[in-house]
Length: 237
Image (cartoon, rainbow, N blue to C red):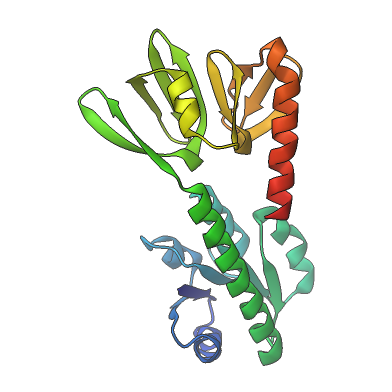
């Protein structure tokens, strides 16, 4: 487990670092004195204690840049001014601590953060399922948790991923058999990942990328049932 502390005051970094090591002696604890220093790392932490008020780049900006880089781990803001935390939840902050940080409160929040991290990693492991497809002369391992939707066009199946599109010769029905109930065939030419549905009506679905996918009239009721079941699973996971 990697735990990072980012505060422009070296003394506070050192104090919090020592306390965290007592709570979690097996963790790798790193300290940074600026948001730029934190963002320059090639590997980001599992749990981040981030000061809000810092010169050059404040904690809110640093957190936003981390989220923009698809960092989805545990964010805990540390602040000397409690009213600053109202904007924290827009950045999916797990918690906040007010300076001076009490040992008991730090340990309590840290324990909850570790439990949340375990839940997150368990959920990620469940979601990260892969298939292998041949695209041209390349064999590509595809992470299905990053598949927004698939479509068939001119005898090719096109996988629309978070960051790229992958084309291969194959039937959509064959792909459908490999997938679980988090996916639904909304049209003879389209198969959508319910995780990325942003909005829908009777004729189309808009996914996270902004793409619009048609819904066949006969599939609308089935899609609604599948999406409601998916939402229930997410709430209970």
